[in-house]
Amino acid sequence: MLNNLHKQLLNDYQQDFPISPQPFLEIAGKLGVSEDFIIKAFSLLQEQSLISRIGPIIQPNHIGTSSLVAMTIPAEQLESCAEIINQFSEVNHNYERDHAFNLWFVIIASDQNNLTDILSSIEKKTGFATFKFPLLEDYFINLGFQLDLND
Image (cartoon, rainbow, N blue to C red; front, side, top):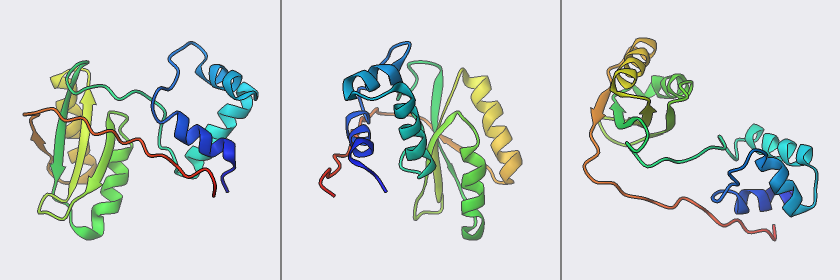
């Protein structure tokens, strides 16, 4: 069960997370609680799968290289393959689509050789081919969502 502080953390820090040597201490100071309390609150949100990570979103190909990747996975193996892909820290999200290419993800790597190596590892671990799609036009979708704090 989420309390109001958890909801406030989810609302206020989807974006504009402090970039400082001690971001959790900075948040704690603003909210009048301890740094340890904030760290535990974010850990609880992660344990409940309400957040997956705390980290930056970097525009594609501004640092390193990135690619949109698709795979064709049998429905009965889709979840297990997604779990394998999620183990790679270079993958920032994946999702299912109703298409012949039914599993899509974005990967970010230090350079093209590293990206190729990671995709080879994914293919080896899943047993399925990956297909890279180049970025032709960059779009930004703001995925911040306001929570109702009255629940």
